[in-house]
Image (cartoon, rainbow, N blue to C red; front, side):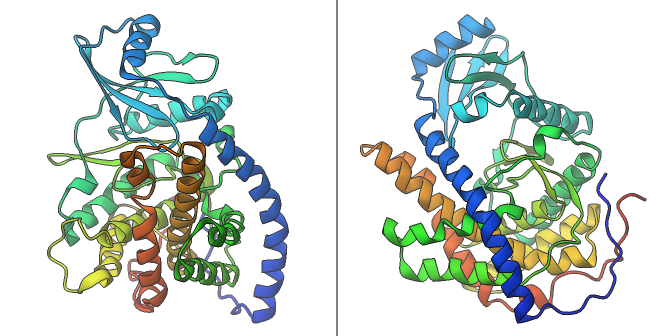
Length: 394
C-alpha cells in the first residue's frame, strides 16, 4: 500500500532550485522522449485494422462465439468491437502490436480488472483466455452495461458522485501492485518532462502558437515544483468521461490500458482534468453551476475532488501538487492528441473524418481548459483541503 509522508514544513522553492531541477529533468526527459517517440510512431503503424467480417470470423475461430451482431467502437490505438451473441454481450479487443509484445503488462491489466471486480467495482473482466496472434493479441471481455459519463448532463452533484467513485477505485487499488506496472509510460504524469519535449514539434505541425505557449507555460510551472514527497500507488491512469459508465445508480470503469505505478494523486488530477475538458466542450450539456462560461470548469473540478475526499484522502503535499498536475495532464492531452492526430494523418492521408474527430475529441478542449486552469488562481487558493488528512494505511 502507498505510504503518505508526514506533512512537514518545507522551505519554498527558489528560482535556482527550479533551474537545477529543470536541467536535471531535461536530461532524463530527452532519453524518455526518445524511447517514447519511437514507440508512439510504431503504435500508429501497428494499430489493428480488422473489418466487421474479420472480427466475426475471429470470434468464431478463437473463442467459439457465434456473433449475431458486431459493431466497431471508438478506440485510440487498439480496435474494439461490441459483440452480441446467444451467450451474451462482449467486447472483442484487438490490442495494438506494441502492447501485444508485452505479455507481462497484459497479465497485469487482466489481474487489475479482476481485482476491481473482486472489490465490487464493475469492470470488463476477461470472459475467456486471451489469444496471441502474429501482430496482435485478442481479448474477449465481458460487456459492462451503462452509458458513458460524457453523454450525461454535467451537474455539480454528478461530478461529486464521480469523484466518490474514483475514491472507491482508489481504495481498491491501494491493495494491488504488479511489477509490470513499474514502467516508462508517456501518459504517466511523472513523465511530463518527456511530453514537454514534444512541444517543440507542435510549431512544425501547424499548431496554433497561442496553444503552444500555454503548454510552454505549464512546463515552466511544473519545473518549479518539488514532487519528491508524493506517495506512490497503482493507478487506473485514464479516469475520463469516456471511460466512466453510469447505469442507473451503478458506476463502472473501462480501459486500463494506461494503468501504471506512479504518484497516488495522479488519478485525481487526471479525473479533474477531464472534468475541465468536458465542461470546456461547447456541445456538452451542463446545469446547476454558479460560475459562467469556461470557468465553470474550475467549479466542476473542485466538486469532483470534494467527492473523492468523501471516500479517500489526500495529504497536504498532494493537495499542493494537484493543480499543477491537473495542468500537466491537460497539456499532455493536448500535446499528444495533436501529435497523434498529425502522425496518424501522415500515415493515413485518407483517414475518415470520424476518426479525425475522435483523435481531437479531448485535445482541442484540453487547450481551452489549460488556459482556464493557468488563469484560475482560485484553483490553487481554494482547493478543498479542509477535511482532516489521514494516513491511508490506517
